[in-house]
Amino acid sequence: MTTEIMYAPSFAVAKVTLAPSEGIRAESGAMMGMSPTIEMESKMQGGIGKALGRFLGGESVFQSTFIAKHGPGELLLAPSGPGDIIQTNPGAGLMVTSGCYLAGDLHLGIETQANLRGFFAGEGLFMMRVSGEGNLLLSSFGAIHAFQLQPGQPYVVDTGHLVAFSHGMGFELKRASRSLLGSFTSGEGVVVVLTGPGVVYTQTRTPASFAGFLRPHLPKGG
Image (tube, rainbow, N blue to C red; front, side, top):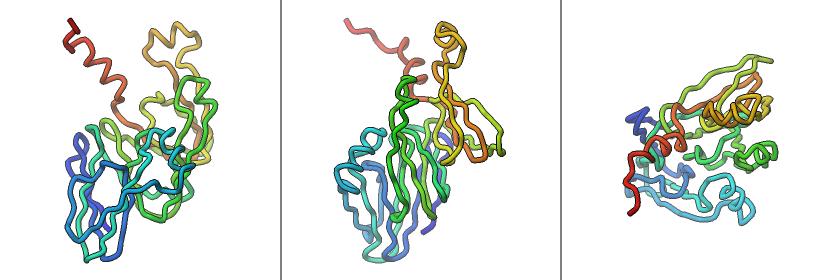
């Protein structure tokens, strides 16, 4: 399997070339086009429990499996919004935030983990842990900016800009400002303090901020 990321970073599309019998699992609705040698099957992966976990984590209940059953072929995958796609190897594990998982090798492990600290801070309750050796495709809103943290090195990230980070990194959710009013007026409600070692993937735009930018320009209901 080989992957080429085209039209990045604004309107990225992943072109996945599959050898005979190779396959990949993608989010429902991600398929843009494919060779007739590839067969697609959409089903609830991992049973009701894991499907419910994906739903709570902001992913599709149903996932699509693409297998090159009739010879080599090409598969085009695109996220629902404008932005970038990055190819990485999760290895020991990546914690992926809501809506950023696009596709991955069939043998990658996917599980949903509760984050109660995030819940009480007003953020999402669940994140996905993806692990194993293989190709993982992550999507973002805007471009993806990745950086490596050294052991003990902290870094503050707005939660809306966080795409994924290495499993096992230290993290602490907190208000951006010491006061509730300061957090509100700054426009930065909740941030996460990540502590290395590990890699962090962030996105340069957020859907919530973009929606706020568009709101004053939308026609008012009569």
